[in-house]
Amino acid sequence: GREFGQASAEETRNKVKEKSEEAEQEIEREDQVITEAQDKISRAKDELEEIKNDPQADPQVIEEKESKIQRAESVLEQLEQEDQRGKDLIQKGKELINSGGE
Image (cartoon, rainbow, N blue to C red):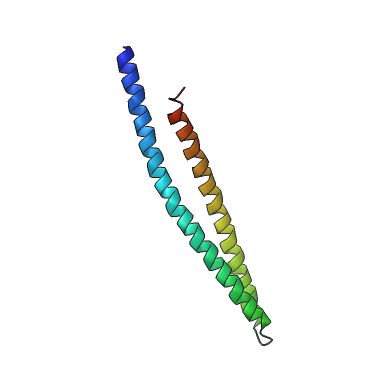
């Protein structure tokens, strides 16, 4: 009975470890997406500033670009929050694995 329990616990820890590693890879991909999105938003803001400095710029175009940037920033913020939740869960999983599930 005891050996079976220990083997079962070890098997569970291995499954959790495997899932944790898969999750870490997914988080790395998400981090890349977030970084790329931050770069795109930064470039869009720079472009918007250039447009604003043009005295002949169409105010409607400026407003549309500002709106798009705000929406992109909102989506990015949500991604960053989800990414952080994933990182927190992975950390908790690692702590459980390392503590032997006690």
